[in-house]
Amino acid sequence: MISVYINYPMGRISVHEDPGCNRIRAMDKIGQRIIRIDSLNVKLELEKMRNKELKFASNRYLNDVWIHINLGEVSLEDNLVKSIKEILGHFYNPLARAEIEYHCLDQALSSKSRALSSISPLKESRLSVQGIRKMIPNREDKIKTIVNIVSTRIADINSRYRSGPSLYFYRRVLALRREFPNVNTFLSKDHNLEILYAVLVSWDMNSRSAKMKYFDDFKVSLISCRPELEAIENKLANFDITQEDEMLRLLKNAYSNLEMMKTARRLVSNSKCFHFLFPSLCMPMDGVNTLQYLFNNTNESTDRYLDIIRFQFEVMRQSVQFEKYLDDHWNQSVPKLIDNAIILLRGISVKPKS
Image 1: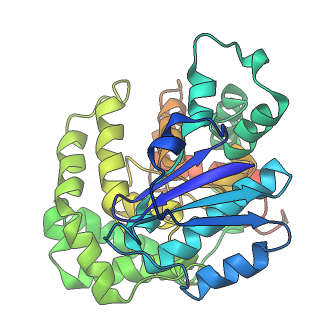
Image 2: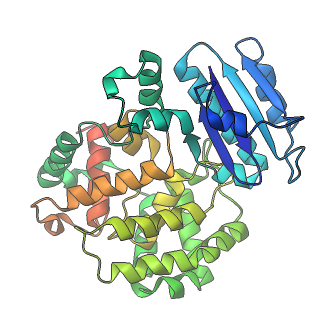
């Protein structure tokens, strides 16, 4: 069983496993709203949320809620928390932007007084399922495998991957970015924004469950993020890839502020947009290739985005002359080489070998 605290004005979602947690007692109040979810009523409670029957407002009566979840299985409970966040995020922007905080679990993981082996099997399972251990598994092996693909057959991507609009608009947006090397100037031209919008659409950001905002709202989001993007560009001018912490901080700021999608998920859309704006710095990401290859699931978070970028930097620091594998089709930057290597390794998004 877990207890989930949701605070709308603060944009907070915290998960607690320990019923004696001090924060649970501290957040209790007279008239506190409480929802209890189990296997018998889970569908009904989710339907209520979809119908916006769970309302929030900035007053003491509607600002928060406790949800106690008991489904008897760790993975089901954790996935339900994500579903609740996504549903409520459709109606309440602070909750769409909220990071899910694992309060009691973080304490169990970080406590120096307890070895990992002393964590209960249930907690061990939950930590594994939720990806609180955010590091990419088998990291070194994956780096070596990617480097090998780049060194031996990265050119295959041009004949086996997409063509048509996705390649056309990709080449167009990169050409425009070279024409307007200052990100502020690039974003000041509506034509550039329209091409950026078009390439995101052609890269599946408005298909299946992904729904982009209308162009006017997309433009507002990008323009409002301009200070963060300019900070990245300024840092990029003298960026040392062995000194990544400051760049990761700047990327985190931009990632947290950029909202181009109607839905709450943003890792795929933001990573692609950052790649188009800073092709030599950021690789594009998706669920079926990037997340599945690196993590064996498609869960996403700000920390996960940053870990993938950190992993990308590690690949780029390898003793390889990546530049000699570049071309004017799909392999136009080193970060895209890494993305293309993952696509070839997964083999799902490319044509079979002839």
